Amino acid sequence: MINDMEYHLTAWYNILNEDLNAGLSREEVKGHMYGKNEELLDRIFGKGHFSQDQVLEISKTKENRYQQAFRPHLQLIAGLSDLLKKAEAHHIRMAIGSAAITFNIDFILDNLSIRHYFQAIVSADDVTISKPHPETFLKAADLLGVAPPGCLVFEDAPKGVEAALNAGMRCVVLTTMHDKEEFRDYPNIVHFIEDYTDASLGDLFS
Image 1 (tube, rainbow, N blue to C red):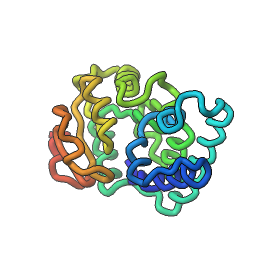
Image 2 (cartoon, one colour; image 1 turned 90 degrees about the horizontal axis):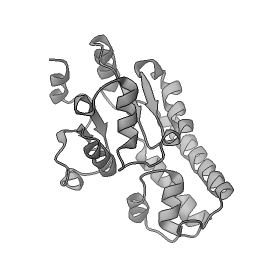
Image 3 (cartoon, rainbow, N blue to C red; image 1 turned 90 degrees about the vertical axis):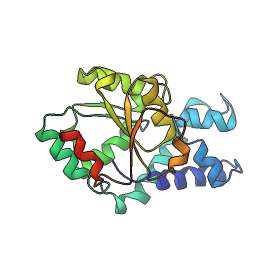
């Protein structure tokens, strides 16, 4: 919905290297950016390296830095506002299935006043296993009352597309953060788009 991954990446890069002395390149940090914050820290430092209180504090610091940096640039990806309005007019049920925590989802939905478009929200706080496990998307589908094959997922990350594949769902990929080549292993992709003004999305309402 928003193009904010560079801001997440910068927040993590600075915390991991300046605060936690991980010694990672920006590209290495990018490769770890999927799943829950705790899982990211486990992948880099080893499971149990930080106490739960430390994980919560690191996570809080990271999200506050991300929000502070991104707030002046907060806007929907081009064309999404019109797409949401059309989907609502066609009575298409919509859900958010995100690896983000509720704190960040609320930041986006409430500042952009778009919460009313979504009948269900599944955050990192609502699942046991994060993407690429299918739990996030399967839970969202269940809350909508829609079978997985009837769902269309919009994703911008390979692990998210993999989660959709594991859930038995088709996927539209936004190439805001990753190149097409990074998605070559996923047969569930129906379109690649740069933003929501892409003419191929007209098929959704035909």
